Image (cartoon, rainbow, N blue to C red; front, top):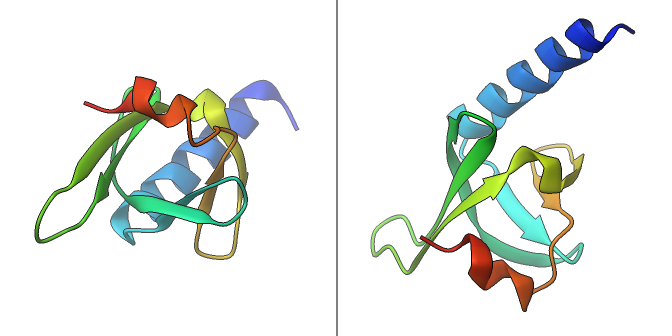
Length: 85
């Protein structure tokens, strides 16, 4: 697969997960919110849809893998604060 093909696949996956409000997971098990939008090279994640408790802007480079309907990030719980907005 060429780089441009890979970029197109990643972009369509990001759009899919944002449009479906996919759960965002760190450490393989801790849900930190849901993916709400894609902004440039980052994903916008909100914890608490009704009462917004935390909002994060996490670079796509921190994505570890995509699950069936979840996005897994390679971020520790202590490092998560640096992405909070």
